[in-house]
Amino acid sequence: MSDGDSSTDPAPDGGVAVDAPATRLHDGGTERNTTTQSTLARLADSSLLTIARREYRLAVRSRWALGVALLFGLFTTAVVQFGASAVGPGRFDAVIATIAELGVYLVPLTALAVGYDAIVGADERGSLELMLALPVTKGRVVVGTAVGRAAVLSGAMLLGFVPGALLTVRYIGLGSVGQYAAVALAAVLTACAMLGVAVLVSTVAQTKTHALGVSLAIWLWVALLHDLVALGAVAGFDLGPGAIAAAILLNPVDCFRVIALSQVDVVAGGFGSVLAQAGLTAPMVAAALAAWVVVPVGVAAKLIGRRRL
Image 1 (cartoon, rainbow, N blue to C red):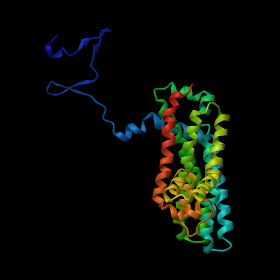
Image 2: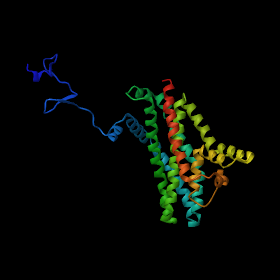
Image 3: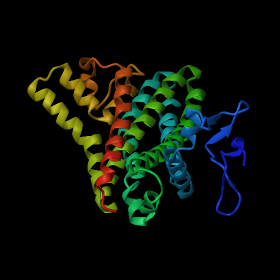
């Protein structure tokens, strides 16, 4: 055998074993064959998005997304039909305020109902253990599950806001679409924030019943009790603007109310009487809502390692 052929060794089966990572150059040298996939391609093939797509397909098949779309479609249609058609453009501010006030109860309740069994339900069905048997970290399972459900929830809610948008254009005109869209997007962002909270609850809960009970308690707090306690503290202790702003930002539902009411000239309900003192802007509140989306899911991804499977 010549020196030029010394780079190949006989294989056990009589063939020739080739060092796969090395390739022959024209000048007799070698180069390492490395993976050249782009960052986007690696992300598309990642286990996180694979889990998100799986969760998305399961959610669509379960038909709860259709139920969410119908629920919000009926809600927005009723509010706009009864609020804007009879009186006209002068009532649009009241329509937005009504969506904001009723959405305070409907949006978090829907999101918590969608997410409370995300992890604990998969654990009880046995599918969580199956996913964790794959070469994927537990944290990615949690994040992927949250992303998949958030995508379905967001799409269903936006679809539900479409009928109200069409009626708004019919009764008031295209000039109102921007305000209506801002409220719809705020509702979707709030729903994703509460979904993140629900995923966190589902991660630490041992049973679906436990997760459901905690989720209902959270809904009661964010929709009703938080405002009562905060308003009582503001009135009783004469708190400054900083404390008022903190109280608003600590409740994603109040963040939704602030963004919605900032689109109109009316101020109604809850923290409405003290919003002017808080010094908050819509971008600040939107950033707080984005943090509410990310932080609970991140905490859940850390705590999943302590869960007994």
